[in-house]
Length: 248
Image (cartoon, rainbow, N blue to C red):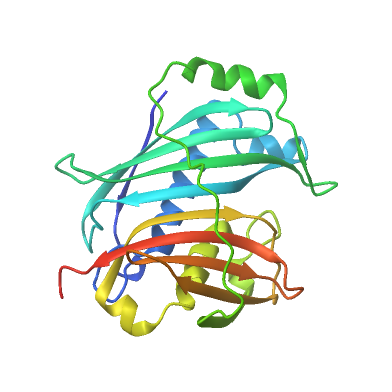
């Protein structure tokens, strides 16, 4: 009932410090979730036959320590309940000594690929997730996202690339995590590491879409982020929190 995947961190999955990148971590979580869902009979291949797909609605990641090149980490994941249209999933990441490195909570939705609209999970889904009802789940993200000020101090423009499109024919959710970082000053990123990220996905993005990444600094090394599509509508909103790098 607890699904486990092991990953050895590759050089191309790390940042300038040689630590696992946020983008790579998001991909690990997506991979572990996919494989767990397949084992439960509700993976992408099974859903595709029904004209359905999973889409990530929200994810909150809390980081204790970022692992580095050549480290082997274990990602454990399990369903964490189902409520109306929302399906929850938890993640825990450990190093080889079984030290907890990070945790994450996530909310998923079932997407009808034919009409490209959300749909309510069927009783079949509910039966699959019911055995997890009494598990000890991680606290779900419930905080509201604050609006950005009218004058946004930091902004970056990005374009959705061909290799960022997934099997749902839109930009893969892991890419959004990278887009958040583009608006942060390089000097800040060089001296700080991400301790927490809470993101809510609102609209899909397609190939060659122009995206504006906006951020404004808050209190205690936190930032509020908005990703706007080319119609200037929110594709995602997020909050990140940071701490000073041990290298400083």
